Length: 186
Image (tube, one colour):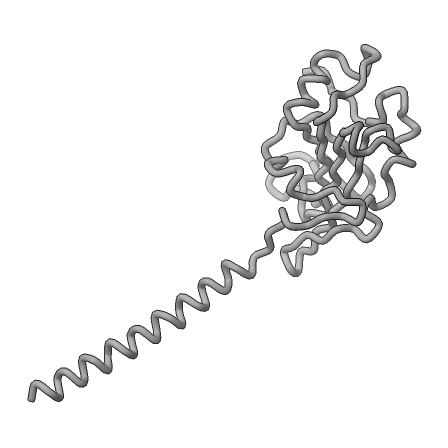
């Protein structure tokens, strides 16, 4: 009698252990399948990981085109430089300055009592970093673009590394130390 109970008990433990292992593998697989965006790098070498925490940086400004809503955020080194008057005071941004542009396709708000466009689908993120030793041929600036794919919920480096802009585009604002976005009055 005890032999049959022991066998049933042992069998249930094995089945339970197998079920637990399968559940753990499925849940673990989902966790591991999520993209680690910080492993990405564009062809010119700028890495997403160089901008870790950009989601929490302070807003410099916002802008809008026909197709996109954009917010520019900067790391503390660049915000401090802006507050000190750079580039209007004739000084360049210091090495270590970083700015990120986050772009969304807009949609009309259905909740607001007035007409307003709000972010809908994330389009891409665009990063700029100043390091005069590492990037001397571009006046110290490096550029990177990472396109967002909604279907896979993942980023990928833009094949050009810089979408439609980069140093060539930013030479038009050389007098502003190659940065388009001014720090607006607060």
